[in-house]
Length: 461
Image 1: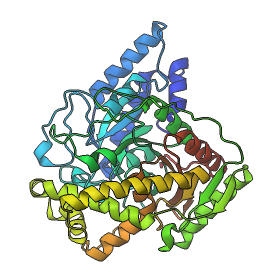
Image 2: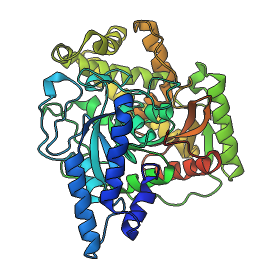
Image 3: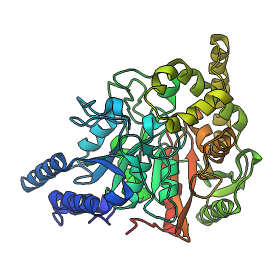
Image 4: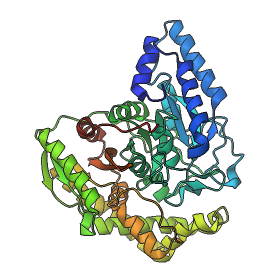
């Protein structure tokens, strides 16, 4: 059962072909088999998961309706609350910080009858690009040829790719569900700003502006169809999040053919030929399916990247002396290099930055009025491992520039789907589809076309 996709499992549970108890037990057995090597699941929620499964089985026997994700096990990133379980953020300070209630995204998946089966690993406080925490250590990529599963939702990416869960619930502040999907050969949805309700507190503290507008909870799965099911369950409102809006799941039909901007080398800073080839292949698939595919480049890339970094460092600069005490030298290095590269702004410059952000978003929306979809790289480099040397300023910039399309689309608040296209000598490769705000439906439809031609590649057994 751990090899089945989420929607397949849910259909089988509703039909009575599998019991929810059998599904959960199969995934608990899979966790016991492989997690000691991969180290993706940080806390196994066996008792509560089996209790939830038994309740689903009871309801089915009584003829009660079941949700669209009935019996589907999912993992939850260590910075999202699961009632009764510590939300550790990967650091010792919060190891006993037991959540009083589910986060909105966890609650919405539960309402669809999905079942939390475990917390999943992440970097300390999500700072840094590699999934390695003080409390739980390093997560490994189940493909094994590449050690790094990506970050910061690398625990969920690895768990889904290895069959420990059918869905992973992570969050993306600049690529943090898309990069693990890319590295682990699975799919991920980074939603529009305001699409899913979220609560991202650290020790009860409400986040400031950058930490409100950039992070977005998002699902990781093994197929685009499963992403769509998770998307439908997660979308909506919650009184705990004033940002979430009741936008329709599907927008109005667009006059065809839908134009797709193919952006293989965003900004012209360089792209690995292997990555370019995957984008060209995906573009050909879309063209054959009737999309109007055109080479283009995105607007205001450098401005968007600079403004993103300014917002991040200005915010973290205020809290860094306190946060720094929670981190090791290694886990603090990424942010310290960013703060050195871009010192925090004073008030006047920060207020100007808010105006700059508005203008950049406007220019992107004008671009998307011509091109409803953008096809491009998750990273301009193939999945790979850290160089082995200490992270320095040059390496920090190189890593950031490789993921520049993820960063700038986070800054603008756009939806995106990352999906695999091929496995080359044991290394998964893929692309992402970016769309207009609240047009996840267009992204998912185009991704499904690519997936139908390219196939799926996990779980890794």
